[in-house]
Image (cartoon, rainbow, N blue to C red; front, top):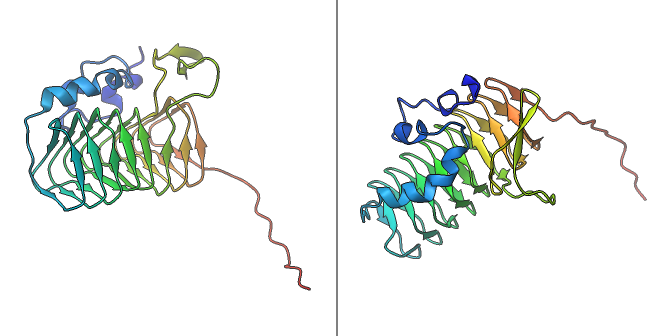
Amino acid sequence: MPEELKPAAFFDLATTAYGEFLSRFEWPWDPLREIGALARELLRGLRGGEIMPGAHVLGDDVDIGPGTVVEPGAVIKGPTVIGANCEIRAGAYIRGEVVVADGCVVGNSTEVKNSLMLEGSHAPHFNYVGDSILGQRANLGAGVKLSNWKVAADKNVKLAVAGVFVDTGLDKFGAVLGDDVEIGCNTVTNPGTVVGPRTIIYANSNVRGLIPADSVVKLRQPQQIVPRRRG
């Protein structure tokens, strides 16, 4: 397997609390199979921070770290582990098998399931994060969707690597975003998108496949301005 496709090529394993976990795997998407197990392993029955009136934390298999605020209208199902100093904003829906590291934001009308959000990552406004990994300080603009389910008859997600299709063995696979990835508003990533660290994806893009580190992805389309007809 190419070195540039090992988890260490996407995440700084020395600076995340989940470096040892990520280092167990060959491909950067392999941890998706174990996020639920990781959440169950980490559960300590911790209810720190502030759970505001009107927030719904369902079940005993949800940990909330100190300094974290869960706002009214948020719904959290387990198994879920949320670290310290996070913001779980009004209308957030965390469906379970989720690990959220310290300093993250799960925002208004954002849905998260079977995903790992590393330190400082943000999904702050109207986002869908399904079967995905967000690297440290990764940020999703408003309306970004990490699509995780193919509409094609063959549901197994495959990724082209050096001209060869690699079968991930996953039928639910959203995106892997490396550290410091920035995605502009209303972008959709197709199932199995893998984005190298420090890449910027401009707004309203439709993205698929393997995007190298330190790239800029732009959607180019013609814009036409014509006189407005009156009368």
